[in-house]
Length: 343
Image (cartoon, rainbow, N blue to C red):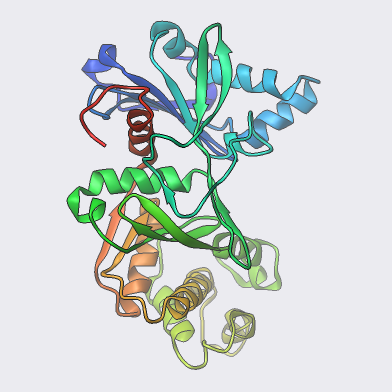
């Protein structure tokens, strides 16, 4: 176990840990996840930590350290024992660690972006003598209103690999990565052709904690699916098609007029916002026939989006969780960092 045992959780340790072939890091804004990958791309050990890039930057400032040195210390806290025990296996990372605020900037790749292209360049930082950590670049959609992603592209590749021929050979498919900034991504095989970002998650967090709507929310332990679906259906209806900014206030007025319980407000608002997001995305995709939607996200958010999509008439929904390590494995294989017969 590493030295940050008080901040770290290790799971999924298996007997074949000695056969590790790759150390993979999903290093984001608020957390870092480290994976030890086996011969077939399976995760043989996993660690989760709060050492996201914002935490690392805060430590660098507090301790008057160069940012690069703060990242070196964070990496050592996360998995120094793995690095020492498996000193010859490659190290790869994805996510915000490759941003301007991260360890080293990995320049965005423009769409169309083949996620398993063996020729695209990765950034790298030296983590030991004669040893580099390779950083996967994000993706840029240089449309009229540009869009970017970091880390989600690797999750998508992992889902494609795990989905087998059905996803690997699909000519056009729609991926959804729900979260603080949800991504809706058009994918052809392993190639991202375009995408859009919705700030639904962040906006919901602000409205439900900082706005006047938050004053009426009484938290509950379980999801009120009736309240959630009510919000989705309002977003789907002609009344909801006006604009979210013209319907969100109903989370307050319905309570004031006896039409909504305080314990229903949170899930009603969630449904209203997710429904508005889906309505907008489907409106932009009008004329494009997608066989369904593949969701890469945590179970709770995926369940909400799947329920909302069903209300909009989309029943074919595939769900994946934890696909980033498989995506990093696929990139490492394509780049020749590890040897495999796949990809």
